[in-house]
Amino acid sequence: MGIVNVTPDSFSGDGQLGSVQAAVARGCQFFSQGAAVVDVGGESTRPGAQPVSVQEELERVVEVVAGLAPHGRVSIDTTKPEVARAAAKAGASIVNDVSASLFEVAAELGVTWIAVHSQGTPATMQQNPTYANVVDEVADFLSGALEKGLAAGVPEVWVDPGIGFGKTTRHNLDLLANLKHLAGLGAPLVVGASRKSFIGELHAQSDAGVSEDRAVAQANFPQSAQQLAASTPPNDRLEGSLAVATWAFAQGASVVRAHDVAFTADALKVVGGGVSEVVAA
Image (cartoon, rainbow, N blue to C red; front, side, top):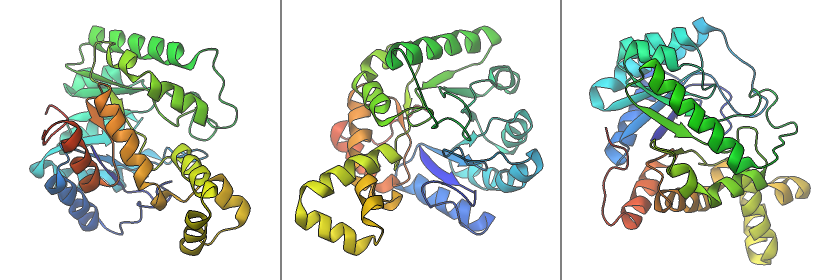
């Protein structure tokens, strides 16, 4: 699943596409590089992000969805019923829902619904995420979402543990270590870890352990020593993103979200023995 952010404040730094034409071109490039789905988002869900109005989100996404729909399967990343309906009318066949609340809308539209686990809202979710057992709690939540979606008449439900959505690095790693359990809940499993902050933290720890790598990182990404020690920037997280994507696929995930589609598709072909598409359209 290739990610097309049409927001000015995407955490990954890829949201400033400038025009509908540029966003459609990016999505078409992703299809040509091996993405089975392109996910269009008009409201940032990065930690600390503030919500945007329905009208503003509609203005950002509808024309992009319409431009991409003739070229492949399109997903709309939204928590707003109005945006989901407009995007479906424009050609989207998947609602990617971080709020896990739009199952009735997805049933009404007859589209696939992705139920994402999150703790809190984007504005608050990383302030103090706490779980007694993150794997059990996320699994219970996704199992319940699957039941609600099917009961409402959603034709197809996918589940996503919400890596980075109200989770610490430790929580994210625990979930990744237990993907086989989550893949056994009875629905296709989506994993979205591309370029996320926990990967930057792990990269920085690796860089700090080897002086040559540390020097290269400091030269390429001039930041304060304290910032560099904490995390590498989003555009320096490719290796970790590929590692997580291939791990997730090998552990039973059906869908992996990616900013770097060509590299991810090639990596998954190796893991999958030549498979060209991971998502069943």
